[in-house]
Image (cartoon, rainbow, N blue to C red; front, side):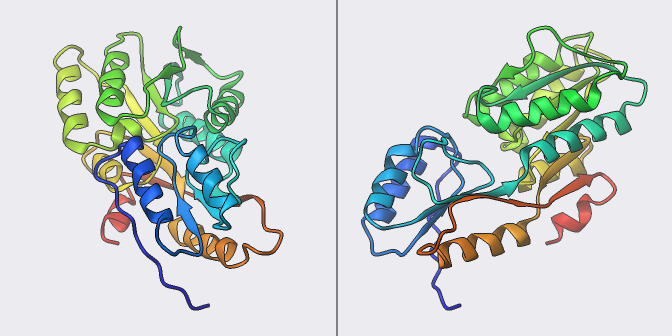
Amino acid sequence: MRATCRLAEVAGFDAAAQRQALQSVLASRIAGIAVAPLDPTDLEPVIRRATEGGVPVVTFESDAEPSSARLAFIGPEEVATGSELGRLLLELLPGGGTYAVLAADPRAPGSRARLAALRTGLAGRPFRELRGSPFATGHEPARAVQRAGEVLEQRELQAVVLLDGWALLEWSRYKAMVGRVRAKRTQLPLVIAFGVLQPALRLVDEGLVAGLVGPRPHQLGTQLLRRLWDAKRDTEGIYPVGFQLITKGNVGLFLRR
């Protein structure tokens, strides 16, 4: 396989900037696109235009809307990751307690599947979901951190489950939020999340997040190349990759990579 890979970087985590970057990429001569949508609905028109122009688009980690024309999605199987988040919560909080769930958009298909699996895993156990949960954070990191702080301040809460990593994308902002919450309550609820980006790894290393469940990058990258390389064949669909569990005990291995 011989291919040239071009990385189109987007400053920050701005869905509008990502859409503009994708539009710019389309203006050049490219054979395929791999993208992790920041907002599942925002990129749909661009993806459709690319596909209609003969440029296959593969999404990874986060999918576009099912109605989009993307060729394939590569990422962890949603039910499996939701179940693993539930198993991790049981391991870290064996006595049970009250938990809350946050997601950028709890109505998104991936979030719904993870949440259903999480609830199934906790059924019959001494856990209670906080009234009003799941809470929407939106797709803007600063707002997600603010919303997480508002929920963490709830005194009856023992744990928070983040179905995505939006609140963990800005390390310094999240760390400052935790400081404010600690000033208001004696014990901080434990936090577990989906996602393995660098800011989240740092938060695990510093003990501010108890654990992460996320995709295996090597498997994900290999599948991306295969799907784009075989784009002219019948490769449409969803291609799950394995997930990994990251805690304080093994996070150093990932930070050194």
